[in-house]
Length: 234
Image (cartoon, rainbow, N blue to C red; front, top):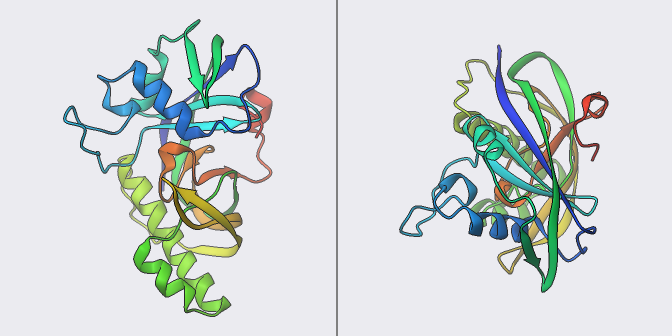
């Protein structure tokens, strides 16, 4: 059974394309600096302690442009963001924000009778320190089984963060991902790119796994038509 969640996509058009060196974390840091009093933009308390909840505002870099994607309360928060004509510095280069483009959706989320096909638009950080060690000792089939289990766990965590109660079993099928070297906060690790099927409706551009607020684990349905109604075509 599925419900709908509110989604807002904010496309940031700067005076020139962002450098390839600019990452989603840089955008996150800059936007959060303008909104220190709003925890949704930076996931920290007033004392600077991390908030370990699913982020309702997520940051993406797509084809040289910056995006903020908000869900539910995060969607409302993004609409009130006032940063037009502000100057930003990313990787020692200065940019001016010339235009904001807001796109609203009400998207379904929840279990589905059929398996739906998705792919990762950015690296999926599936492994923590503990299951990384297990993963490295496994053969190919065991690795696939572990990643399928982690994928389901990520979807459950995401659902909880979006206040959707999962009442039916989530099943993963046709997980087809490959390893990609990655770094998070300077620490080398393994990320994954590829595609998968689940009997679950995942809103496009939503992140699953670790560090989704920094742009990791962004998911999009394969063969959808969202680009026809104004959503960014990634």
